[in-house]
Structures are given as C-alpha cells and as structure tokens.
Length: 478
Ligand code: PMP
Image (cartoon, rainbow, N blue to C red):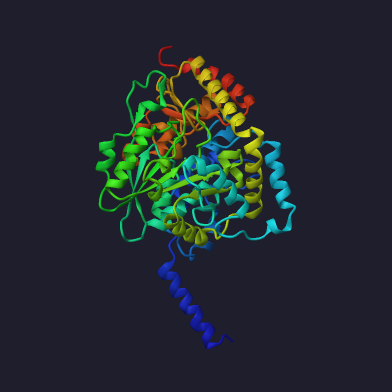
C-alpha cells in the first residue's frame, strides 16, 4: 500500500514531467564533429548521447543557453582533426619540448614539502609574490608592493576573468574594447562577467601577398576612440600580440593611454609574451606616465617558463585595482595550486642567474626563423612576428578544390576554418584559423591566414617542412 504522501509525490512528479520534459538533441556542432573524433577505445565525448541516456536526462534542468549553444572550441576541434590523421601539430600554442630540468626539479622539490601541498593564501604564496615583484618592478619602473599590488591566478586566463568580473556589472551593459584579432578567451569571459565586447580591428597597411612586418598591422586611433561609449569600462591591450606577433611601440601605447585617460577607462594589459621579442623591446603600458593607476598587467608562468599546464599566472596593478580582482579570484577558484606556485617561484629565482631567459628567447628566435624559412621555401608569404611564438601565413595562393568534402562543423564556420582543415588533411600540418579571433561581422578580415605556432621541437618543424612540400602542387600559379 502506498502512503498518501507517496501517491501525492508521484502525481506531482508526473505533472512536473509533463510541464518540463522536452526531448533534447545534442548540440549541433558537437554532433557534427563526431565523425572526426571517434577513435576505437576512446570515449567519444562529442558524439550524440545514446537514446537511453537522452530519455533518462529529459527531466534534468537545462543548461544555460550561453554554454548549451556553444560548439567545440577551436583548439579541441583542430587538435582532434590533427590527431585523426597524425598531423604535425603547429596549432595550439603549447610547447612540444619538455621544460628545462631545473624547472621540473623546482616543482618536484616543492611537492616534497608538506606545507606546499595545502591551500595557498588567495593572493598567492609569498615566495612567488616576491619573485614577481623582483622581475616586474624594473619593467614597470616602480617598486611593487607584493602585499597589495600583485595577485597570483590559475593562469593568465583566470587573471583576465577576475579583472572582468571585478570591473563589469551584470545588467549595466558595460562595454570592453577588444582589438582584433583578439585572443579567443576574452569575449566569452567578458560575457560571463556581464559585459559586452566591442571590436576594433587592427588594419593591415601593406600588400599581404608579400612577406610583411607585424608592425604593418596598425590600430586606427580615431577608430579606437570612436568605439568608446559612456558604457565603456576597459580597453584590452595584448602586446606582444597573439596571433599577429606585433609588439606595440611606445608611441602607439602612449596614444592608447591618452584615449584611456580622456575617457577614464581601465587598461587590461595582457603581456603574457613579454619575455619573447625579436629585435624589439617590449614596453609595458603601465610604465608610461600616469598609466600605472589605470592599468592591470597580466602575465603567465606557463609562457615565461614553458609550462602551460601548470596554470599559474598573475595580475599586477595598484591596490585599488588588485583588491577587487583578488576578491573575484577568491570566489572563482579561491586560490591557485600551491606546489606549482612554489615551483614557479624557485624556477624564477634560479632563472635570474642561470641565463635561462635569454637562452630561451634565442631558441624561440631560431625556431621563428626556421618556420619562416619553411614557408619561404614553399612560397607562401607571412607576417614576420616581432614577438610571441606564432606565424600568420597568408595561404591565399593555396587551391582548395570546389568540391572538397568538409565535415559540417568545419564547413559551417566559414572559409578560414576550411582552409586550416585543408592544411591538416592534405598537408598533414595543423594550424589555427584566425577567424576564431574575430567577431562574426569581421571574420572576413581573417582572409586566408592560418596561424602556426613555433613553440615546437626541431623534429616537429623538420617534419612540417617535409609535409609541406606537397603544398607546392596546390599553389594557384601551377
Ligand atoms: N593571453 C594570451 C594572448 C594568450 O595567448 C594566452 C595563452 N595562449 C593566454 C592569455 C592565457 O595564458 P595562460 O595559459 O597562462 O592562461
């Protein structure tokens, strides 16, 4: 015999099912990518769920449309496509070589001390704050106070999200200006924090059918200023720039700074590649007169030490900007992992005296030159990067057959995605379609560029050189 309560409960439940249950289809993009990702033995997370799972999930709360509607991120998409055919992966910007021995040992030693296996203070471990202050005080032209002007984050990504969260307010339509191409994480992070990105593209002031300088990519300052509205709160500045490799000049920084002063805006300076410049000096905008008080500078141990998986980054700025950033960080992740903060601190201390930074910079410059030679050889022009570790190659001369078959998930993302996919399938080399770094109306500006990363081993670059020989037979002029 069921109790009255049980009967009542069952009838309420069944009524609720009638109201709330709607059969859900898996997200279209994920389903369409499924053929690319199926590998024997691996669970295929992008494949449609089996019918039995769908029906048992019918009554679960629906995910936020913000996430339910989004397709695969470009990195997963291109990594999967590359793995499928065993392509040389020059796509995502992770190092394919191991970190130096002294860096690995620093982390191993940190793990061996019990205290380093427990929570760190939300602001960060004192040893790391000290090293960040030591490195960046001279670069920013002031003695940094590690107790109030620095916060340690779970990678630069989380530092960026913390700044957006701290300075944008839901329901207020706050705007953030992004210069395109813009690192793909900015826009969704701004939206998560309740803000709206406003886009100003870098303009290419040279004929892109030849090798050009990254300095030929310019921000039209009048266009930048015209994008400012009473709702604008922040300008995001990325120098050295991903994916262009542009290192903003002191004069450009001064002009951007003047705009931020005229309209009382914050500058979020993403300087994760500050240590990688080739024949040019990196200038931090926060070191320019009057810029300190309105700038948060973000950095990354992942980039600085070649350990992108450690997820350690930082934000530097005046107390008034770091305090709310730290408050947001405390609610987003609470603290950054302790042992790797200690590992980074120890490695940074050693790197000051063992010559690591300059040796690393020279290595990257050598790899950059090697990748440029490879494209010189196959006959495709590119943008010479003055910083960071990406090469934008103009592949407009590559013939893609009209009837070439692309998976729907690629095809639906436009010609720039199709081109990057064609490189993977036909030449066995993966890159990233820079269209992902533009808003929808500006996607056409990505043109026929493909971004290749050169934070890769010599063997990887040699393999790319061999694979790309096939490309010579696909050039328009043939
Ligand atoms: N900013 C830029 C411009 C980047 O290229 C990256 C990483 N690719 C990040 C931020 C994120 O750095 P991290 O790995 O430290 O989160």
